[in-house]
Image (cartoon, rainbow, N blue to C red; front, side, top):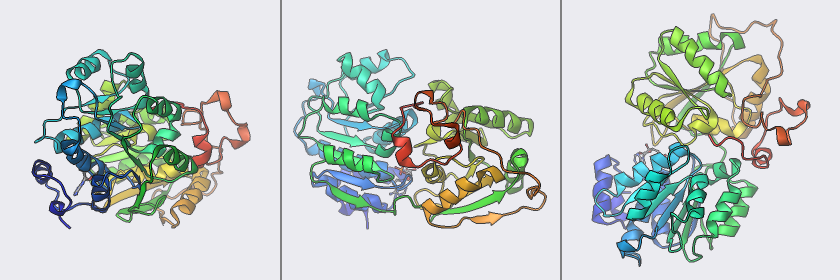
Length: 425
Ligand code: AMP
């Protein structure tokens, strides 16, 4: 299969050629012709499958064909909604890359930065807006954006937007967009909530699924290292040094845990930086850029901060702590083994986390290889303790807090989807 047979015009094909992609990924091969036939789609695609190009390439093609070519009208023609600021930036970077031989202007809109520069850009006339829901609502209420002639609406990582409590914002946005638009909904998982949203939003959608939902990618070599909690940092340092890892994304459950791990790694002479919701947007952007450039070896992240981060050919992901939400395991390890590259995902598991591990294995429907590394074998006299989720997602939601008995219980997607918005980062 070649990109040339998909119905894309010369300027788009030239931009694809510049990226070095030789053939479409499965989601691209399936989705592009359907989107070009002007149908709505509901696409289940894991991260790293090439889904951004799967919607951006046909979107650009359709923009060249569609009705409003009056660029002075200052109406936004396409809106791409994403759950996080990082993902919004990355999608817009992709739009710019694929649109480089086309006249369309795009911009990114998210909170945590000044609104005025965004207003100035929007005033000049923007064709494609990539936005997170909260800041977009601010623009809508200030009437600094006009979506009344929108032709294309794309919801990227819709499952995560629902998890993050954006459903009401999405409903508000829908009131401001016309009915006769084409809508594309991308989601890594199909929950009942996604089904409900797609029933409301999509018109006779085509269903596209390129990988089993809730299954971890075959491209990823997974292993569990059994180790005592107090020796995890030592083991991580050992793995990084022994393996001569140059770039590793490490997940912790809490923001505090991320900071603490970074200072410990620094003491071990391993350059690292943390990325989480307590960091300013500028600090997060800089951390990601430094990591991508190879100036920093270890990026330590919490789940929401890392969601959607696209780092080319990231070779190693480490779960320093297993997530309390099993689906997050799939999202975390999806940061590696992307677009045809093989990656390695290692989880450091202490005795407290055995229940989390068995829930994850049930979800991905396979046993993960177990390693007891000489010198790091767990001390059998250590007893399991309850995991304190105080700083993790869901742990500090006092308004609808659950009883202390349930604090340590692994959560599934539907229980999380019912919880409040919480931190957006
Ligand atoms: P995404 O799933 O959109 O986050 O894309 C994951 C990665 O795959 C990104 O680094 C893209 O640049 C890359 N990618 C997208 N399409 C292709 C393709 N057809 N061939 C090779 N890499 C691709």
